[in-house]
Length: 251
Ligand code: ZN
Image (cartoon, rainbow, N blue to C red; front, side, top):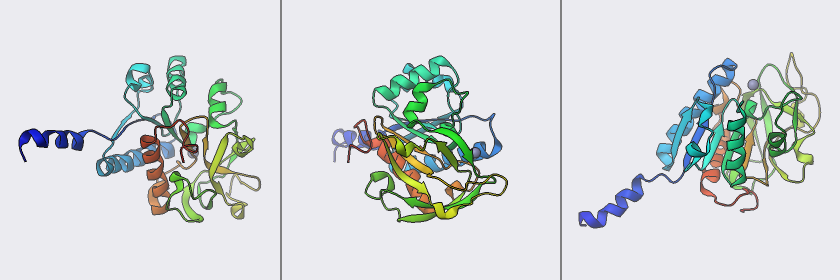
C-alpha cells in the first residue's frame, strides 16, 4: 500500500472516538480523593484500550464554553462547580446535548444548595441520609436491557461504599429512569449511621438529558468488582458514543 493510501487509515487510528474531560478536587474527603484517583487510572487505561481521549483536571474554571468545545462527556468525580460562570457553562453544555457522568458526592445537594437547575437535572432528589461506615451491599439491576447495564447480572455484590438516600426518591420523577437500586435486603445497612428502609436508587438517568448518575464513589474499593467496573465502562462508552440527547430514548 502506498503511503498516500495509508494516510487516512493512520489518521483514523489516532483520532479519538470521543473526548472526556473529568473534573475532581483535592481539598475534599480523603476517601473521595482516593476514589477520584482510582477512577482516573481506570478510565485512562480504558481510553487507551477503547480509543477515546480522557483528560482530568482539578481546575473547575475549565467548565467554560471555550474549554468544553470538542468535549463529548464531562465527568464529575468528587465535587461540583461553585461559581456562577462554571455552573452556567455546564447548563449550556447539557442543554446542548452534552454527556455527563456524575459520581457519588458530585450529586450531593441539600437545603443549602442554591442551584435549583441542578437539583432538577438530577431528578429532584435531595440528599437525606447515608450509611456509615462504607459497606459492601447487594445491588439490584432494574433494567438489564439498557446499554449502561449490558452484561450485568440481575443482582451483584457491590464493594464498600457510602450509599446515599434521597428525598424524594428520584424514581417518583417520571423523567427519571432508574437502572440500579440498593436491595432492601441490605437493611439495616451501616453501624454509626443506618439505612433502614425506603427506596434507594443508586444509578439513574434523567431522560431529558444525556446524563448518568452513579452513587458509588467513596473510598478505594469501588473498582474491586469486575461486574461494577463493567457498569463504569458501559457508562462512559455509551455517553461518549451516542449522539441522541437521552440515553434511554436512544435505545
Ligand atoms: Zn462519601
